[in-house]
Length: 297
Image: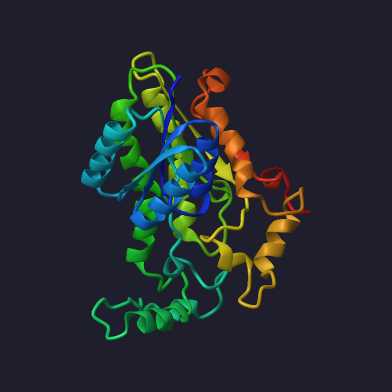
């Protein structure tokens, strides 16, 4: 059966690898990304290697943009069979600079915002990036930005593409969650909260869509620790050495290494294949080298 796979956030990082791996299996892939140039590079690479792919510009928090993307996929490939919600961001200004409270943190409550009218926006951004950020002065707008892309973007993409999936056999939605949905990872309050929301939305959506009328299975994959452009600076110092956070992760990972992004695709393909997972919905597979099973002691 012809299978059309739509992947949001497929212009870089994990999404581009997912797109290429599905294309290798003969699937027709729609590479959706906010950055059209990045999406076109991925789609071109797939075509050069004998696969079928199109690049589509898409803003996952803009319903009109998503609907335009859906029409493009319909016109050029057909109806979506598999939706992989991979679009996600991590904003440095939505992170704290400390792992835990230190006495006196509450005295600095002034939120530093990057002015769009600054004469040198990059310099203004770098200056704020260098400031201490705690619970008491982190920018709420930046927290919402992460939540909107990671959670609301997953909801809205599902809302739009499920129109073409409901009532048809063999279709599935696969969300990308995180270890942060299970453990309260330090320093990333927005990212952790957004992925916990994606985890719960996966379960809710499976209840809503998987009945005899909807027929759409909804599952998720929770990556463990993989070195990607999104998290590179958290694990690698400017001089190329590993950070303490990297060693903290390795200490709790029984397999003793970071994952290769390609190792995530087996779980994705399993959920996408109705012959393999036709009676599975509302589930999350952790691909984590054993991280969740290890208390670190």
